[in-house]
Image 1 (tube, rainbow, N blue to C red):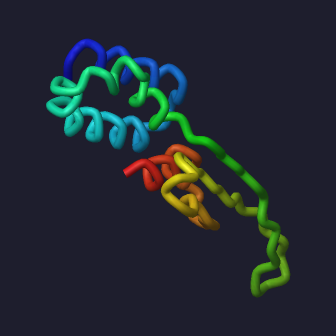
Image 2: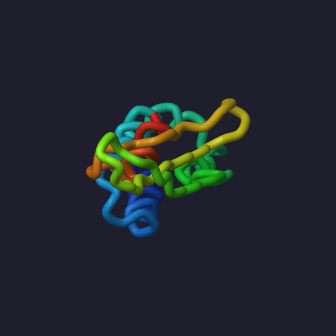
Image 3: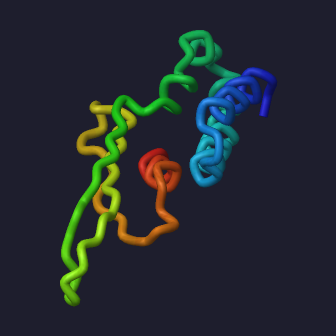
Length: 110
């Protein structure tokens, strides 16, 4: 990646600490966009990369439910929208404890 892409990527890392999946998705997109940005520097000047890396909207909500044994459980739901131009946003209910906002951002970014 060139220096401008590296600086933007470093800014993404600082703004989104601990979101390894999201970092991976951003790096892959930046690497694939490199040649196009070399030919069209106006996109770099317009901060397009910074804008596509910041979601328009992120919502985290709780979902209480009762399991088959009558115990109340609490799970998290996530909604992440990177661009309203692209239609509905990614998200939904995630019941596995390893899922967090970085996972959902990864799914929505690629």
